[in-house]
Image (cartoon, rainbow, N blue to C red; front, side):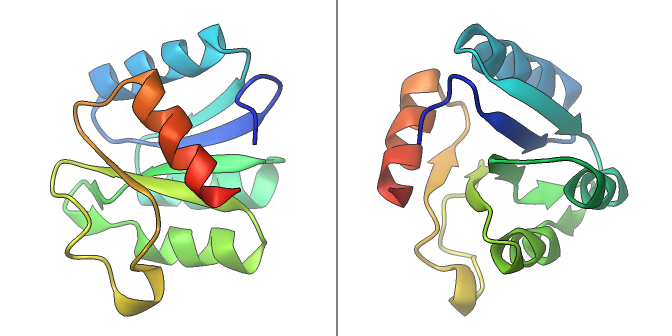
Length: 116
């Protein structure tokens, strides 16, 4: 999957990180939809065309696994972004590529490559 030309959904509750990631992805040629909470994220999933998603695991004290499962049901690829590594993912999501904060565009590219 290429970043350039993709419609990417980003779920991130820390605005500095969200805007930085949005800028990074747009510089790569992506169109980015950002959500900062789970409800907004669910709306993006239902109302927008998405090719790929990057989900922060812990969003305002809640986990984003329900949104991950929604994406999975729709056949939309995703990776997790977290400061905690991937040890805590539920069994059905273990093995989902996970980037650890702070990350770079190269980390994102490598995680995406794991999905292909």
